[in-house]
Amino acid sequence: MDRLIFHVDVNSAFLSWEAMRRVKRGEPDLRLIPSCIGGSPESRKGVVLAKSIPAKKFNIKTGEPIALALRKCPSLTIAPPDFKLYSACSKAFKDICRAYAPVVEEFSIDECFLDFTGTERIYPDPIALAYEIKDKIRDELGFTVNVGIGESKLCAKMASDFEKPDKVHTLYNSEIPQKMCGLPVRDLLFVGGSATKKLNDVGIRTIGELAKADINFLKGILGNKNSIQMHNYANGIDQSPVRSQPEEPKGYSNSVTLEDDVRDAETANAILLALSDSVTRHMRRDGARAFNVGVTIRYLDFKTRSHQRQLSAAIDTTNAVYEVAKQLLAELWRDHRPLRLMGISLTNLSKEESAGVQLSLFGEEQQLDNKRDEALDKTVDALRGKFGSSIVQRGTVMKSGLNVARKFNGETDLQKNCHN
Ligand SMILES: [Mg+2]
Image (cartoon, rainbow, N blue to C red; front, side, top):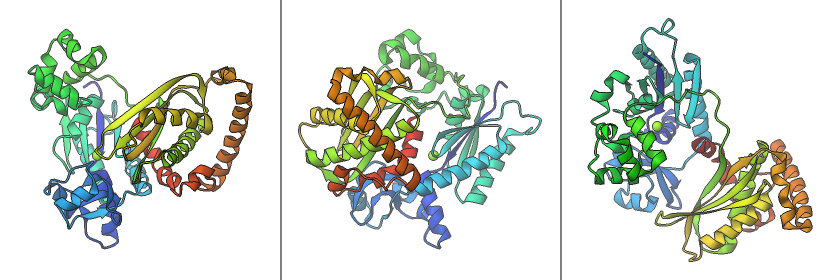
């Protein structure tokens, strides 16, 4: 055997974590009743982020509005998301994993890869080891995980997705023909809805059929880059190593789901300012600047649109990012249909000091402004580091009456995790 990799995946993470907390308080187990995580129960707004199996029987779907879910099941129990709880649970189960594996890669808030390559003397029986880790997490922390075992990250992850919950599965290379080839292409890692449709249209329905397809034929359908990776994956080929250190972020992003629909530019801009503030703070902390600013909006019908701009100088101050974001929003959101989500992303990063100095193109006055912005950001960042993020709020943010900053500060780490 080449390598030995486990993928540990919490079963319906947000819901089980909330359920576990409530069970400890003597409240009903959310996993056993129609329930979901999302929105806020009083306002009946927001969307379903996770649902219980009994809720699934009422045809409640992830991503749909809470109001609609309540029409399908009026007795639905709704629990608001709590990212503090999620990060604590995430850390707890990953700590157990670290006690066993020499190398652990955090893949998302509820998933990690464990590399056991070369440990056969300590752990002669991988399946017994997987059961031990799974049972320890369940018995000590009160929630269940699936463990997938394979010779690559791909196969381990595919295996953990087989039957759920509280299960151990293997997908060794020798088992690929029997366990993976017959699955629909949609089940293959990173094959999205549109790729599935394109493949189905040309008669490729299973992973096995994708594995056997001619690579040049696939390039015509899916484009060069995607087809090589998908073809490799379909053949169970994935050499990527398990990395214990997270990679340098490729970008920073932050978004906020709005509790009240936003219809006017003044409110939307206030939210952009709060987002600019939060996202640049994280970037500044890492000493990076961005050449690219993007804005994303989502309408009530979940249609999502983005707009981005490449700049000639890299920026890192709240105001500079805000000014670009405001322009992008004005260009993107002409119809002023109500929004339910807004986001900002900063990409094309540079850590070079010189990346930011071409600012002369904004004129000297602007340069002075920029110096002042930098000084202000530094002071604000320092205060926040000392007293927590709610200590300083920008004038406009407070004026809008929306406590946006508090809301998404809790989400930042999660989102950074997901986007890395
Ligand atoms: Mg999961």
